[in-house]
Length: 169
Image (tube, rainbow, N blue to C red):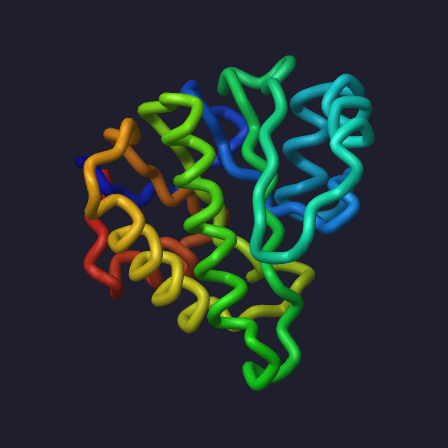
């Protein structure tokens, strides 16, 4: 299993699936969600509408349409409310659900953004710690997933993953 971090635009990665830091309606939003929808084209929003939304802590899958990635896994992380409303568990569930879905679809290469750290306001250091811990636990049993990339939108995000022991490649 390869676990790595990169300073890269997630919409440019030619992997089996990229993970979208989605909202519960799965509609185009801001940040990474908006960027993924723009890069994938209007077909993505139509496909997401057909899914009927997604609860926080869960994930759904669609084709990647115009993206170099074959699929988009839409994972809904929690809004930050100070950390006393189940946010850590919900964030871990979003990562777990994404890996479960990737395994079900026999996807080998997967890229994650820093879920919930943008407009949802989750503190970056806490979120990356949860992300790395959850992903390592989820890939411990044998899985189809062979490579996970933490795609970082900034040097600050990259440094947070490096601090959690994820190698930069």
